[in-house]
Image (cartoon, rainbow over all chains, first blue to last red; front, side):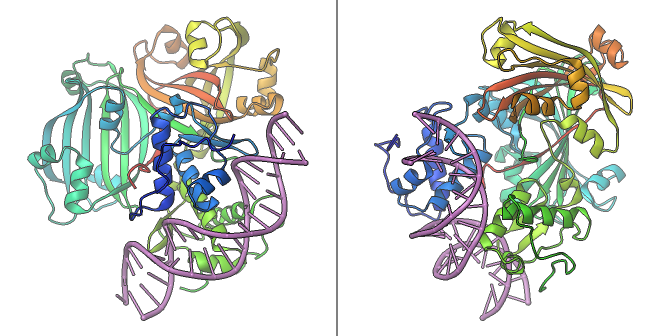
Length: 255
Length: 255
DNA sequence: TAGTGGTCTAGACCACCCC
DNA sequence: GGGTGGTCTAGACCACTAG
């Protein structure tokens, strides 16, 4: 039970600007993802890890907390800390989920831009984005594809700093909308509020997605908030029925 | 900027078995929910709160972390800790979400039990629950209602301890399936893996939910894991298109 | 009873924001 | 420069699990 830690790993967690607990978390994550620690196998005790890496137990605990939140580990009082089953580890949600989800499933994510334009917000859009009606917003509408086949339509309305604009070309070059907003305008998403329901395909949906009018679609609406919790995007996403939106739910409430 | 804390609140956080940081979190939560701290308003500094309640700063930080994970607060390095906007605060996901979601939206959640029976697992069920085919499982199928109207069909398959059974009557008396499993069998859910997509209503769905055959439904499949991360339930839920599944997504990954 | 995770402390220093 | 949150430490004691 002593020293279950990888003997080959270097002890030194390089002295960079990265906090110690994040370096440890990264190391533990690597060990898990490489398969050298299997599902439901125990980690060494927090005290052992602390000694092994010459850090305080509290720092070890911070790393474990982080990985627990991400679904990679779980701890049980009095028993130990264990590697989560792979089914849990593979499940996660990100804000820019489409590309990541698709790649994780082994597909190639793509997009076909339908329009990128500046327009005054109507009442509905202004309402969800908490801005004045007629204030200018950017609209980005595109088809999302997996291995070349259309699987969804994204229609996003963005609140940009005054005067800021970008073109379809910028979006193509940047690859990711969120990356573009962050790099160019310093607009970083902090969290998103999503609402999922089902809806029947209308004529446009049907023709763009290659399904029959009336076919069931998954409708996902999202309000994205910036770090200061100001709405920065409203996005409506419709997916064909073969597309699956996956998420992990933890019952933090009652514990 | 000094002493923004509620002057009327008692300083003593009762000495019960409840950890200090949870008591503080509960107190802060109460202040927020009562409206005495509005959206985006700052909390006193961690150091001030620590002095005010005669606890260490680390304990204050634990309470703040907890509420941050739950979407009630957000912190910014160098600026302070703030109350999250109500739109974020009201958004959360629980495992036993149907009743809570419905009540939060001001509706009355109800159920009509279709069947509660013991049956041998078929290949598909045994596969997702990671048990042997033909091992006995309990099946609970019911209609979920909001204000008396049917909005969804839940079809759950449960892995119980050997010999354990319950009846429809037990479920009615207990009120909640999870409560019944916890109280009676010590089976507590730790987390769930959910997969959402859309599907067309079949004849049975249509008649039970009062929609047309082919109408779009929201399909939510869930595998519920126990504290030891063993599958304890597979549940298939279908909802009419007016039902909304809401969730909060945070971008923990890149930070 | 020994070992594990869970809570709590008192202090230190760093990184960041804003005046 | 002064205040904020972020990281880290070294030690203590409690609560739970399991042989």
